[in-house]
Length: 323
Image (tube, rainbow, N blue to C red; front, side, top):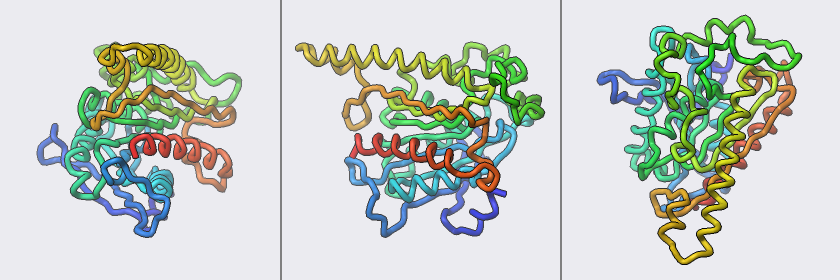
């Protein structure tokens, strides 16, 4: 239902991205280029377009890049970014960490090729993901942490950030019926078989990731009628507390004379620019898992507009910090 209209739109091009960890194999991605006549397009400090990588949801068991085409198209149209939406190998045939490794291989390909293929700046890379795609996006950030081409910002929509518990063990949304209750057994196909070996693995469980391995700017869209609500809020609370402490330390050091210590307390991108941590989130009391992807004729578009505006504004500020 979501794929066919975009298939006919000709708004994007389809490519195959080779996988380093699986020589001879590739995954499909679609590329949105900003309109040639765009007057609002942003440019980075290097005179290039911002680069954005998105991963679709589907509980790690299905989906396609067109699933997020509405968001990706809006991001490219309004901010002038080159946006790539990619897929990955699915469970149950492929279990953790295959999808995460696919995502990191896609990111590595973009870092190496985006500048000369699309005139997009790999030093100003942002990521996003819906549901399972949010988990993969945060994994990409961890994979690029400490490198010249680290992820500058992320936006995740109802992302699973703690897979140490099976879906049936996660807290149910207050007194609201869970529309996805019947599908819970399917949601464990990716992490379930290897959970016991990865209880402390931050790639599977981004909630455990050190803040220094995550983007300095992070935004979360969080529906409250979702078994993932509690884990997302725990992660957001922890990150906000740590960000406040680290930003405060950096500000204190900035008033001193030891510039080397000052710089060690701040995030640096490949161009040498310093950036502080910023953690933002937006809750939707009536939202349920995946509700932004339900056809608008069923639920309207008020929440979608609000969620997308929040995400685009956050990414715009991220790009402007590097423009």
